[in-house]
Length: 507
Image 1 (cartoon, rainbow, N blue to C red):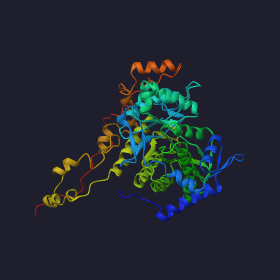
Image 2: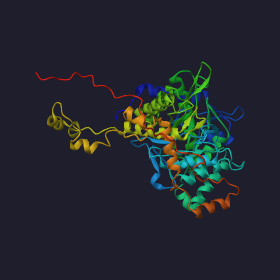
Image 3: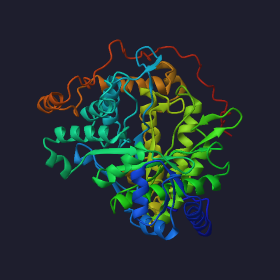
Image 4: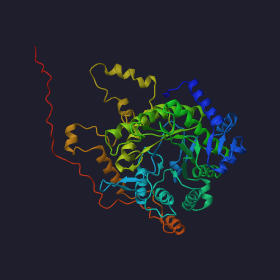
């Protein structure tokens, strides 16, 4: 398909050149001393007293060209590995919400490691979500196992690629040791490292922090799959214009990409971003803004210019429930991204500006992801698909329902939703007038009521728990009191419609 784009080729080049000018003349504030020395060793101009780093354009051009054109995220089961760019976008859950809507009470509370285990179980069965970016924090984590209490229940209950960020290199080493124990030996793990990380080393505007920058270098040096995210807030820490915001974050992405390549040439990267906008009437954080989708379209163009994968946090919402606002905010920006050629969409499960996870929302988002992929699947175009012979055969006033093409294509030409309701109102009312969120919650409960095929075997789990004393349980089980919603009914409120078409009479 031809991708939608806002910028012409000269405008893309102008953004690139302007970004090079920013890095060469303005530079970045780099808090990490090791990173400053690394920049200096590879041709950047560094002032250690002020912590400022300026990167000449020829240095930027040299190292950004080393970024590979693809990236692979690996899962415990190799069948779930994803390499992109590919024809269809890879979809991940959104991550790191502190809260969850309790599936039993419906009241928002702090999330725990048990919640992560259940979410992982559901994600493992969600056919349109390929990557589990760990959805919540774990409020019950022991103080020396903050990240372990997230990765362990996630890996224990999901065969798909798992990723999230960690605070420090020591935490990263703890998680990598977990991977070695799961694999059975260090050699088996490093032959195919199936744990993926994220980091956010840039604090917009133009600042590299200490810890996350340290993580960036550690991951690159050791061949650990990890990618960075740029997270600006338009109107607060970027210019209040889309070209201005794009140029600034493009410079920041180039700087992090260069540092990764300076740490190890060929380190895989994603041009990944979480651009949100401030509602300047009150400064509200607005990830559901339509401009997020517009910025993703611009980022997709820059990623193609650099020949690297494009990713973004799309399908986010400010809504606190799975209502109409959540629907249009979660549908519009991923669709713009799909039409613009995005390769990686982080979207599933979160509400309330990334603060709260909801099981029903996760499965609704899984269905939105399926529709987005249907758009990118496109369609074949040929003389056979035009079906001119069928049109001639059927002629005026007849039906195509019984033709071979209709039967062959009935489940592929159109997307078949599981949760969205397409029934007659009378049928819908007879079945209880349910909302999509109620149906999604019942689906989540159904998944959690069955044994988890992804769970660790007893030997593996014992090996892990022997090394990490006091670790959280990490098991997926149906929460006590989560009853199936009774959405059946037998009463129809609307009468049958009267056929007002005039009856024909014989002449």
